[in-house]
Amino acid sequence: MTTRRAADGGLAAEAGGASVLCQSCGAPNPADRDLCQRCQQKLLILSGPPSEETEEFAQEREGEFSLDEHLLERVSILEEAVKRTAETVGRLVEALHKQEKNLLVSQTGFGTLRELLERRHLIVRQEWADLWQEKMEFQLRALEKRERFMSVKDRIAALYDGDRRKAFIQHLDEAEYALFSFDVERARFSLEQAFKLDRDNYELALFLGETAFNEGETEAALGYFTRVLESRSDHFEALVFSGVICHENGDSARAETLLREAVSIYPDAFLPHFSLGAVYASSGDLSRAVAHLVRACEIEPVPQALYLLGNCFYEMGRAGDAVRCLREAVRLDPAFEEAHYLLGLAYLAKHWNRKALASFREAQRLNPRRLRYQDLVQFLSGRAGDPLPEVGGDAASLMARAGQHAARGEAEKALSTFQRALALEPDNATLVMSYAMLCLSLDRRDELESAARRVLELAPGEMLRATASAALIAAMRAGGRLREGNGIGRALLEAATSNFTRTIAYYEMAYNLAEMEEDLDRALEYARKALDLSPDELKQFPLAVLGWVHYKRRDLQSAVDCLEKSNELGPSPTTLTHLGMALLAAGEEERARAAFGRARSLEPRVGALEEKMMECMKDSARLLERVKRRPKR
Image (tube, rainbow, N blue to C red; front, side):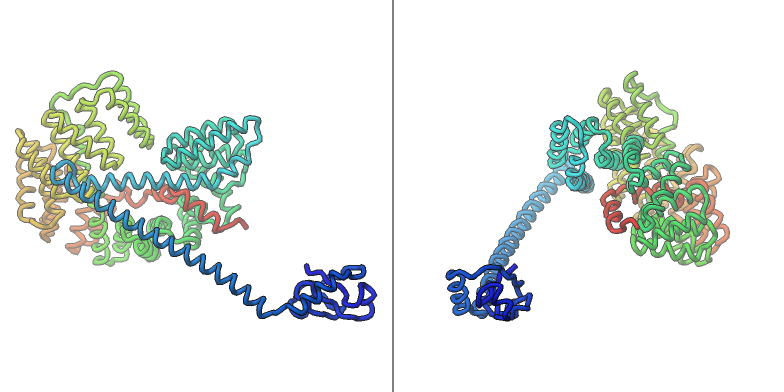
């Protein structure tokens, strides 16, 4: 605020209408003005007579002040600031270029190292790439947890009101240091110790619950979210997460209650509508499911929500609406294999056969492993044959517990328990093969490949060798390494001493050649040899691959005949889907529809509602972002 004095003597001058000098710029102003007419600064009257020093100061300011000089000084200051900013930006750009160069040098070094190791046959390129991807994803998840923790650490500390604050803060600091070193487990242990000191800290409980949920430990996560709701009954994340976990545990009533509460409190949030819609869809209440899923897609049209909405429309017989939703889903995510498959079924319901066949082929192209090739490996793993190495007491107990964890869907616990068993008997081929089968069922390709290779290194009996080879080829096929898989098949054929093993080898190579579509004549030869050599209990598999080869060769009638015979011996979603594609290509729409219907009933691959719900829920960072963007009304 600018101070002013009357030019002719204090308050008396003001009363007489004399001018008032602005002490900012020195300009005279009428006594009735509040702002200086030159610089627009606030004017303030000070009572009392002016001193000689004040008058001299005012005269000097009035005589020496220049607005041009004032503006020039301001501009000079701004120019200096801009100059310093430009210099700083230049240094940052230079540092960025140096960092880019260093990254290029490092990448070149790693590429050279990989090439040298490949030349010496110490590693496989795909294995290197897969492991690199796995480690990178782990680091990114740890980085996400660190950023999330740093954003809530101060709030967690502020909520503590106990008498052991120093110990509590020390645990938080230890967790922070562990996250900076990407040691998630140590960080989690420190936070659990902190939580023991303050069980009412809902921010800490929420973070621990999210971490447990993302690790697949739903029971532990539900315990933490319950603690959050005890403190904050309207907490958004806790309501949604708890609802999803209750639904996964089979408690649909509790799940509905929690999610309806979340919807009522946060009507403009995506996740409550999406999750509640998925709950209603899984219970068969399609009308209410559609209402919530439509609202979820209006808020945020993510592919998973569009897929579930399309699935509901398809189940309700509204094929046109299903096509619209699924087209949008595959537009947003062209690699969404399940959406392509369901879109094919919706096209078929509309009698758009060419579009249906194109969608089925795209689903096949995106994920050939999805057509349940593992049927053969699972068959081999349960076949009685040569006596298998026995598993010791402690290892057998751990193996049984791992199976129980797997049956309950606790993948990480199952794997860790099996690994403890392997630590006790690392050279037991039966145990290692059982671990490989667990990895196959959980779609853990890297662990499956290493376990299968380990079985082959142990030089087991022929049955275990055939099973391990089939499992290894399954992992390679999942990674698109078909030629390498055929190499394993040729090695199995060379070492075979029985028609059973020869059947497996020919079957493998025929299937891979059919997928590559490069040498279909040889694929046909291998498939026929597999069929000729196969024992009765294995006939369905060579017939299935022979039908698939015929389909690839456009011999549709032969394809239909072989696939129908295979399904008569043992129907599976794989062969029924192949049969449907062959019938559709041959123009037999009604029979194709029946085949796809049977495949869908055996394995409802387009009904995995919980799976799609969990895909959206796993990304807690995206969840929080949505919460912030859509505040409570």
